[in-house]
Length: 241
Image (cartoon, rainbow, N blue to C red; front, top):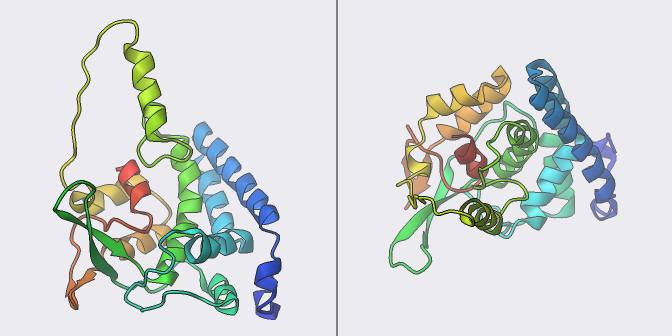
């Protein structure tokens, strides 16, 4: 499977996805364990290995072109779907240092409200590369997040947070602060986020390029000096932030 150029269109449907998932999971487990130990050098080495692996790149492409519910929402490239052959081509193209495109901003209604919130739609290639980066960064940060943090976490939900609150207050009353961070995604400081991520130079430049790529709204390009569009891997960035 390492020679993507020799693959045919049919072979995309013949890929053993469970086998690929096991390979990626093993690498992610090693990243998680290295992060727990504080072995930064091992974390960076394993992250580079993961992002270069065909298995991780194929999974990233599959997630944004098949599994994701917004897979048919086009970015500025206008691409809504890919044929199996083009998916394989995209797998071979995924690498850090790639040129980025602005995100396309769409406005969607907030549940139960008249106001709308902005959603950033990256191009298919940017989405796939962001999904690949997320596969590498997530286990590092899962090992570092606070145990009582539930937002945008793998395998955690609102119900887990409710259970934790219930267990905390069931025996004696305590104060509960119900607060909302106004414009959370829109106000993230780029430099502070990059300093906190503190990753290796190539990945640092790639993430910075995404943050600074700008957004296109009503056919106009707007620069992005702060914040990160809601979409792509913004949830992980927000959790880190």
